[in-house]
Length: 534
Picture 1 (tube, rainbow, N blue to C red):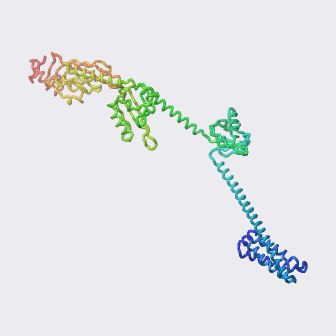
Picture 2 (cartoon, helix red, strand yellow; picture 1 turned 90 degrees about the vertical axis):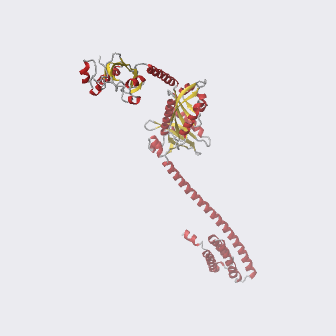
Picture 3 (cartoon, rainbow, N blue to C red; picture 1 turned 135 degrees about the horizontal axis):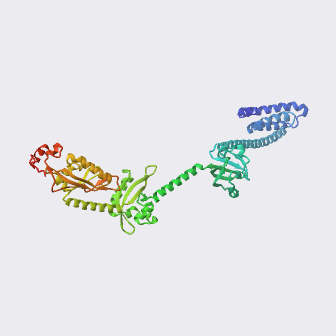
């Protein structure tokens, strides 16, 4: 009802109509009271009318009520009562002054009332906002993934959220009433008291890692951020860091494995920056180049690489950084701290970031100085051996363990009439007489199997004179310890001075000698006229 009346008084016409109606009602009431009160004090009721109009309708309608009341009351109750006009005018003027004062006082009262109403409204809005904020805060705390604890200054829990219950395995009712000391190890009690004393200082917040005890007796690592509110309550936000601890431990173990992989590697290893600076080196590399680790990490690979080998290394490193090749291997020389040279075999790859940008070179360095010396000695030995084989009057050839020829001396070519291209791939068995090949092959297999000397007597082999000649073949079987294969070195095939020779026609008949030869053998000659039988 009051709201509807207030809405009506927002209309100007209604407010002024209210003023006129109030003055008219007051006039009628005063006329009705004349028999009882006479015509004295004609303006008393009109002052009340002005006050009511000013309070209810505002200053304008109040002034309107003064303007209407003053002449009407002066004429009706003063002039018509046989009082002189001057008296009526004076009383009317005094009434106007009183009315103005009343209007002003009503204005002040209404203004103060409006101010109070506005203040009350703002206070209600503020209270409502505080309530809503508290509800939102409570919702946020309740739904937060981190545990929330609120306790009094003695550490007794007053409030917890669902995350706190899940973290420690308690129901809310079970946690309320417990103390901070109940969920922390006994050995942390002194530390808790020290933290509480520190938090009593204004504006202090403490963040630290703790171990909290669950309902089942197990402990969970947590990170706690706590402070004490101005009203003395102790509040803390607690985060479970078990997964972070696990990741940190895994990372630590991974870094330790990486460190051991590099530091304990039997060959040199280094992590090299893109500008060539050694970032990390292992002990083996330090031993190769003769520098201590602290000194080597202050150098670049360019500084210890032989100048003649640097350009090739830089070119390959550039291609590796640009992604043109996945890795490279290069033999080069390092200059040791004492100025001597060391032959190394470098294998390099590259470490890239998530965006594919190159970060570091990963280098593996193997000292191959002794290997190169051995290879050079071996090459020298083989060269001397070949020179010796070429100078020998016997046939000398070399085969692999599977019987394939890998070397022949010139006597082979001279004796068999085969070129080297014709000899390769067919095996050393090719020149043997067909009837002797199986025997020669079995003798070779026995030698290989038992690591014995290969020896074959009275074997017939083909000569460039187009005759088969008896001879003696001997070869030591050598076992290379660094491979799984066995190589025969220096098998020799020699022909005696009393060797038997047979014509080439015997080859087609796959016999010791042909029937034609047999028919004339008793005459000591061969019908082919190409040899003698002794």
